[in-house]
Image 1 (spheres, rainbow, N blue to C red):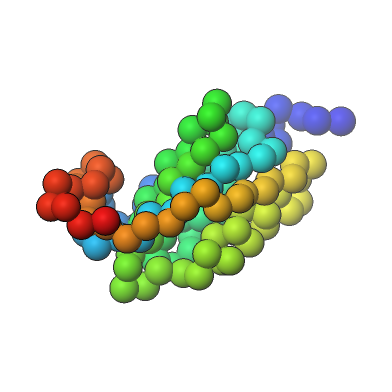
Image 2: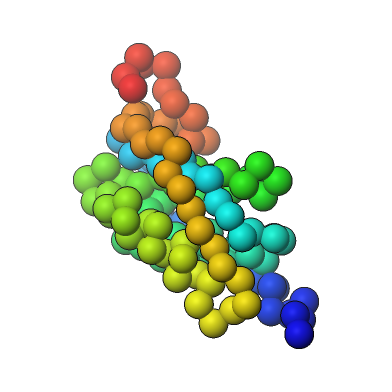
Length: 119
C-alpha cells in the first residue's frame, strides 16, 4: 500500500551559488512518473548529487525540467538519465526522462540566457 510518508522528500540545494553560473550547459528533459512534490524532490536531489550539476528546475505540472551543468565538468547526458531512473529505486515509483534539447550558453544569476548573443 502507498503511504504518503514515502513521498516526503526534502529538497537539497545546488552545489554552486546562482551568482556563479557562467558558461553552463543546459539540458531540457521531459519527465514521466513524477506524481507529487516529493517525487520531484527525489529526482531533483538525485540530479544535484552528480558532480558538475549546479542547478535543477522541474515543472511538476508540465513534466519538463531544466538541468544546468558546469561546462568545464559537465557529466555525460547518460549520467543524468541514469540518475532520474535511479531515483525511483527503493520506491514504488518509476521515473523516466527523455532529452528535449541541450545547449551551451552564458546564463545570468537567475539561470536566464544573457543577452550577449551566444547560443
